Image 1 (tube, rainbow, N blue to C red):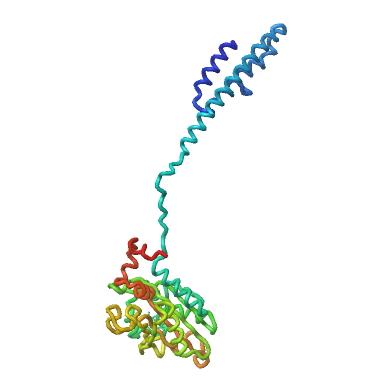
Image 2 (cartoon, rainbow, N blue to C red; image 1 turned 90 degrees about the vertical axis):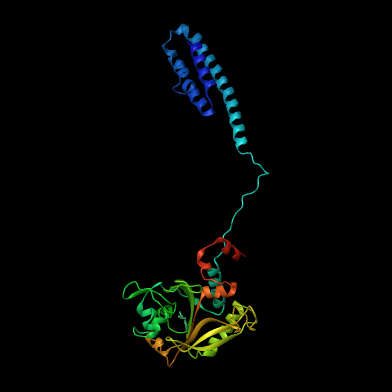
Length: 337
Ligand code: DAH
């Protein structure tokens, strides 16, 4: 009987392939409900005189099995450890894995630089919605429905009333409705126009600025623009204002910056003129102030708006605006710090 059990247990234990299987065999024989344990428990059914001899035999069996299991366990554990270590071996001669870090998109870089630059002059950032009503995008900006200036911007209409904003200038109205002067805000964002060629894209970014307070003049605008040109382009950059027209400013100006590529002497980038047009600006039209409940006899202000892609193209010498939306990594990789 014990010999049979010893053989059976030994065979099964030796067949166990890993320590987990071995443990199960051990439980089957030596566990609380195990076969050897059952044998020990059956002792009380044995005649008293035969009990000591029986007990001795069963205990010897248990000890023999315990020893056997311990030896096998040690062997299996050692084997498993060796296997684990072999799997974790490090080949120090292997070439390292390259980590390719991304970079900020040139439009994001220019946007961040502009925000930094103007935040340094005390401007706060306000972001308006991309879907605008006709009122904010045009009417409140002194551009009523029959106004020819609406044709200057080919608009994507969503419904009769709502459209994809064509200019961040819409944000000027939202700010002036919410806030009393003094106002000094910067409004970056995406704008949309049905327009598509080497220098125009149906979606692009603008940066709008608005300053409203008592006694603001065109000189304040010009002083600020000089500072902007020096920081954005070059220390020796100059600006000039040319008369222009926008419905929401009076007077309106177009702002040129001296060409950084030739220093103003004239080159292919500036088409021989020495100047490059970078933004539109002007004194906020009295009507716009009135539309927002700001008294134009007490307050005055200036506004400006620029295309971020355009600034990026000038700064980095890009010939085609599409480079900025194609997401060709060979192009984008050049803008890593
Ligand atoms: N919104 C104009 C445009 O999209 C740019 C502009 C011109 C903005 C003059 C202004 C401004 O704030 O004063 O062409």
